[in-house]
Image (cartoon, rainbow, N blue to C red; front, side, top):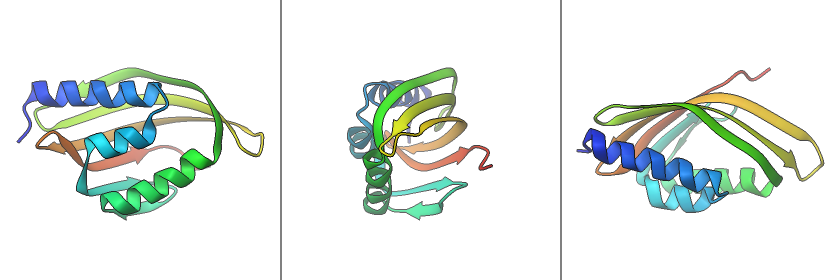
Length: 121
């Protein structure tokens, strides 16, 4: 079981990795082997290996990250959530921006469940 302090340190560290562009490192460091991630665009992806594969496809589609801002971060005993806006230039030259909320459930210092909320149209 994670304490609020462990969860606070975990989410702050996770967001630091993302700001540094270390998304794949963050996945390996902060996500449990049995993690379930859910996004409106992809549905549920079960297990770290499947999520690493999906996330690598995303990373490979990015030519350059241009911003990652988290104006709100909330932490509970075994949960966290953050609001963010992120923008990047894709490998096909498109400028993309997304605003989303991510909600995580933590166990033993690792994320076991993460769900993203964002508009798909």
